[in-house]
Image (cartoon, rainbow, N blue to C red; front, side):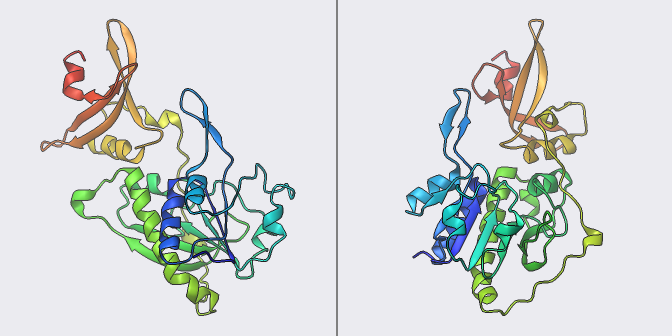
Length: 287
């Protein structure tokens, strides 16, 4: 079943997890707006975003505008009447004229307890900061970044043994929680039974900007802080250290690690530059 009045904006795997929950509740959108296909991997193969793949599997039309300001590219969006827009990790800012299109506004799924960790990397930033109390927020979008009033929130807590989580896993957990919160909230929102609550902007914090360079580790640094980085940068930008072998510096990517009983960092799996993944023990043996 598709809702004839919902448009979904989203791009990566986080978005598809939200879509899974919407579809399961009979709230699959009538249209999905996502990023254009982009070259990936070393071979630069033109690859569709995860949300486009999901849309094709569910027989839902997509728009992939390079610019939301190009009305020719988004004609199906602006030439129809819509009840609700939903945004989950779309990757582009929605302009004021687009936000004004749907009858009941635009709801954003954000993986933090706003106003904490506004911005593009709330999940990775929460892990880096060892912030164990987090969750998801549904926000009525306005023109400013993660600034609009809150519609609903849900806390998501992990057991002690599960912390720190891998960012890719934690993002999926929060995305599904956000999708479930959406399915519970949308009927109430459309029925006018929810009053948006202004964020306390004085307590707002921002998630940090992450770059590829952040992934470089000094293995002599604090073990727990390094473990937080390994888990937070899982997937992207990933973590690595430099190793000298036969007089040459090589880059060694870390794919798995844990804290040993004595509190030191124990590397488990690595990918040495130019080689396949192996155990760290094999790497030390000259693998």
